[in-house]
Length: 490
Image (cartoon, rainbow, N blue to C red; front, side, top):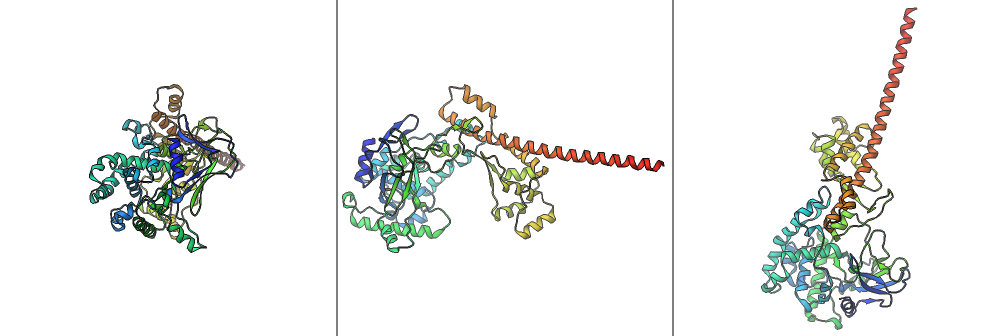
C-alpha cells in the first residue's frame, strides 16, 4: 500500500523527496514516515496541492446537493456535512480522485467511541467520558444525514445505502476526521485581492491530467463551493468555519509523540508543505505533532497515550491536565449559592471549568469564584456594580474549600493512585484499552494528589500561624492581668 499511496500522490500533483522521505510500518503505531537519509533542517519533505485536500470546499457534493437544501438540512455546521462528503466520495470508488487515499486510511479504531460499556467504565472520573460524543453523533446522523440520503436517490443510490452510508460508516468517518484532519483556512491575501480571487477559483480541480469530471460540472461545483464558503463564513465569524476542516493526504500519515516534533505543515497560497524543523538522522521517524495534548485527548482522538519520564520520577504525559467543573466548586463553597451570582459570573466571561496541570498551580479564577459565592450580600452588590469579581486572594477559608473540592474530585474516580500504580506494574493481562484508561486516570489523579498535598500543607501552616498568634495574644493578656492584679494589692 505504501508504494500505491506514493504513486497516487504524485499522479494527483503532489511531490515528495523520494531520496530522503519514505513510509514504513512502526510497531504499535502503524504506518508512519521515515528518514531514508539524513535530512537537514528546513527541508521540504513533500508538497500537497490545496485541491488535493478533502473538505467541503473541494468535494463537489454540497454544490450538487444544492446549497439551499444543504444549509436547511443542517449540513453546513459541524462535521456532519464533511462526514457525508467523505462517505459519498468513497462510495464513488475509482470515480473519486481520493479513492486510493480512502484505501490507505484505517477502518478500525481503538478510541473510546468504539469501546464497550465495561471499557468506558474504566474512564470513570476522567473528562473523556463526557467528550466521546457518540450520542450527539448518532443524533446528527438520524436528524441530518438520513434525511439527506433519502431526499436524493440520484446522488445516494438506494443499493449503496447499506454499504457506504450506514451509521457505522458515519462513525468511522468521524473518527478519521477526529484523528487525521487539519485546519486548512482559506488563503487570505489582504494586499492582493486578485490573488485571493485566483485561489478561490482553484478550489475545484481543473487540471487536464486529472480531469475526470465534465468541465461544466467543475464550473458549477466551483461556483457552489465559493458561495458555500462565503455564506457559512457570514453566519458567525466567531465560530470555526466547518469548511476549514480538511483531510490532508500524506500529512496525516505522520505519527505524533510528546516532545518529538521534527516536521511541521506550512500553508501557502497554492500548496501545503511539510518541512523539517530540525535535522533528522537516517532511520529516524518523522513526527508532526500539533501541540502536545494530554493523554485524555490523545486517547479520545487517536486511541493511544504517551508515557515519558516525569520530573517527580514517574512516567506519564507532561501535558496531562485535570478538569474541575465550576458546579463542584460552587456547591462545595456554598451549597445555597445564589443563582444570580453564578449567572453573573458566566455572563462576565467566568470559567465553567478549571484546569490543573503539571505546574500544580491553583487557577486564580477558581479562587475568585469561591470568594464570589461566599461574599456577604452588601459586598456582592458592590462587586456587581463594579463589574469585577473578587480578587483571587487566598486565605484559610478559601483553602479549606479548595481542599474539600480536591478531595471530592478525587473521589469521582473508581480507584486510587496506589491501586492504579499496582495495576500497571503487576497486571500483565490488561487489554490495551484497559491499560490506556488506567494511564489516563492515573495521570489526572497524580496531579490532583500533588495539588491536594500542597494545599493541605499551606492550610495547616495558616492554621498553625493563627493558633500561634492566638496563643501569644492569650499569653500577653494573661501576663497583663497578673501585673494589674499585683498593682491592686499595693
